[in-house]
Image (cartoon, rainbow, N blue to C red; front, side, top):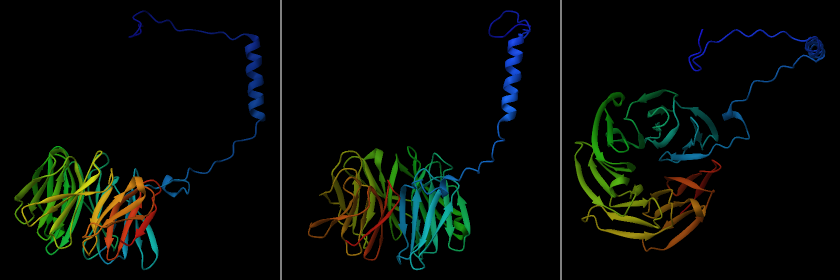
Length: 330
């Protein structure tokens, strides 16, 4: 018999133990027999239930009435749902790691995208516990829900960026709109959506009813998070990389834009109901508020704030380092 690696015949090896080795082996067996029997150990505690495990925040969403808060965990297949009125919190297990969240305007449905590296898809969670999972392409990210008409809109696809528009009973009707490379932030107002294309330094305006791309507006490098003012008149854009400015576009007057000084690495942007611009500043542990006259305030909050969820006068963020939720009033 020859060994495939060595290429030479192999011979069975017979070893005869010495008297000393036999005596040592017998002593070892006797010593082992004298040892106490091993005690049963408790089963390891699941990571998600250990008090010493920090569930870092990845994204946050609040229902329009401010009652229900959803927080997605980073590097976990979990999120927490809190009923602020009842002061009750429950943990929900997902099929993949969550990316971003959105509540329906009615507050009765939560949409969750699961990340491209772990079971990419879209999960819908109802307050009654019912759950649906839908395919929305290979790399879903930003998500929004509208009620009139009822639609779910998902931007993703990375280099082959798309916008999935789901409608009809059970959201079974699907329209896929090609966008461009690396979609990031998504903002919906009425029948129109804006999407940031990070790899193309542009934002695109899409008609959700027809799937037509209406406009394409160039912006400074690496557009990332975006938000639209409640009246739809302005769009706020944060940028990745070392950029310190936000970009604000007028959506109804030819796309005029201006820069608003902020800070590098803005984690999220939003508009308060009165039109104040908001930006989460992870390095400053604060939320920046800029009013119509350009006056600005830094509102202290949790460390590494991530996401901005607005309900009435309250703004919620989640810490990317501790998972704690912070609330400010701009």
